[in-house]
Length: 276
Length: 273
Image: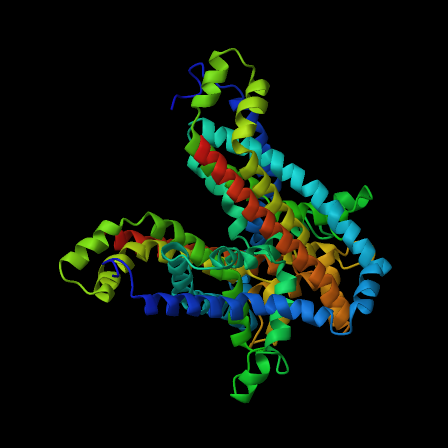
């Protein structure tokens, strides 16, 4: 018999089928389209598009930008999570809101702000030009724009977890004579490692996939300031569809790996929590 | 919790706060200050003219109305997915759960390319829709579609935890008192989820308003018709009109802020009622 708080079996299956069908059409079909379009003429053109020197440069640049932006925002996120989740102080709620602010800012604005500061007609533009330093339309601009859009990821993953865990464990370690760093490495880090890893992963996925913000500061110089997502756009606008979809497929693979790893980390985190 | 000043046993408050302020100030606050101050050089009247140009107004209208329409469609869809994920056990549930996050993880340019290929007049879904007389790609409908794609996870992931924590007792009580399943759902479950639905709607809309990468490929970007506000910022920057670009950006942020404020006020009234 159906319990009073459950739907009849037919309704249940109907709802599940509807959800699977709609999500499949809305989310999965686009993904399938990327791989189909990329492989339209077999593997040859895909390999050729990825081996192209400009594509190689774009891949290297994307890795470089992520390799700078992700560690900076990881360290900042750890510091932010430590003071927000372990102490009370006036302005704490405001600080939290400001840390999450970049999520509600358009990617284009995230790029625009750096042009306003460091562009040719920006606040510091003339000074930079006089000293022959280039930030916008160069790699530093790409890094800054990426830092802005990936800013909240690590802090946002850590803060709710660390607030829930409370400060008892670290207080006990301090009472037993552990120094601050000892307590961080031996007590805090093991408690948060899966969440931290998950935050870093999401931060990295966004850093490598960011389009709008880097598009504004890049200047689209091939082989120099073109990241992978920007390379996709250039190829697409030149009607090199197979090449565009080949690079897009590589980025889609990155997204799939990120999702799989995130699911795995969540399960590891839940198992640990269940044992504690 | 203790105040940090009174000899806190935990170290690192000053250091971590210092690093946080430096990180936040340098990477977020100073740049946003430039966005706030730059349009000042236009003067109040110049600012007003800059953001009320017909082309700007049309793009703002498309960005906001498109985002609101897309999020409105995402409400029932997101609720359905969250309901199925929380309440039912079925083969492939984990896969469905993972699928929900796809728009979060997929780079926006890839999503834009994919949606364009899918809904173009010769695409898998675009061709049958074109036969029905519905044009999606290169129209405002395509813009809203891309906005819906990036916003869906926000609705699902906001409703899901609230639904999971919803006590079954209320529904049981409703059933005991003679309510049909549908009545219990409509009168008990839905009102309890309403604040979460509204919050998800707000987040999805905020994201969709600023969305760029997934939209510009499918939009076709015809001025006054399918051009979104973020693209107008890019156009003005390319003409070295920094103040004008900042003015559009500021107008977008201000309107988003007002919208979020309105929605959160609505939520508060709802909760009190």
